[in-house]
Image 1 (spheres, rainbow, N blue to C red):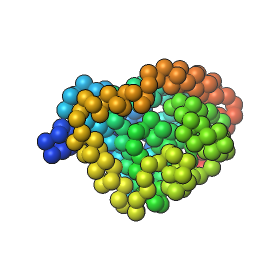
Image 2: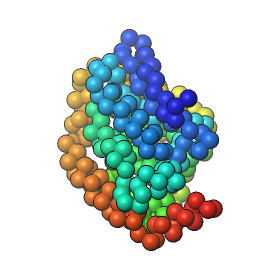
Image 3: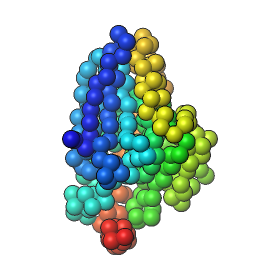
Amino acid sequence: MSDIVIEDRPTEGNGLIRIIRLNRPQKKNALTTAMYHEMVKALRGAAENEEIAACVFLGHPGTFCAGNDIADLVRVSGGQGIAEDILNFLKELAISDRPLIAGVDGLAVGIGTTLLMHCDYVVASEPSTFRTPFVDLALVPEAASSLLAPRVMGHQKAFELLVMGASFSAEDAAIAGLVNRTVPDGAAEEAALAAAARLAAKPRQAMLASRRLLRGNGEDVMARIDKEAALFSERLQSAEAQAAFAAFLNS
């Protein structure tokens, strides 16, 4: 079975919900460039299908996403720069014309946390944890998180998450504004799908237009994605990063 499973689930006469499920549990849903490629296609396809009301990111019980697969990142980049499929995915998150919802159950690391900053509604189970160890890997934040996190949670909390690499509990994430709602263990998927169904039941064009007003034109977000990607690419070539990757892969 594919490492990314796409399902268009019907609602009660109100179109479809596109589920984008990370399906690599043996690797804690660590993302490869091939998985990024599939998610780009899924998001672009949703934008072209008028029947799709919202996209929902899901993982598996206990693991949402462990971040980038470091071995794949090193292999594909060759230490030269961020892969095109990764950059395309980050930009698709920023320009998505459909509401993005996430149901987080368990571990959310790196991109598993920063992609949530592009989501319109995030549900997390109470045992979930959120962490972005970019600096520990001698890298820098990505997905415009250096812009979006301070907006959502303020500079100090954003610094704690993105630079100090602190682990946030589901309660911490909710207080910081990263998560809309916490639910008991195992209930995140159902709650996220229910939220998507509520959106699908609303007058479609009014709902989409309202979302566009809230999000704005996104030019600053796209510019920050590019700026972060340039710095990320520089860091990939650094001796610090090469040493951090080697230590990680040998641990």
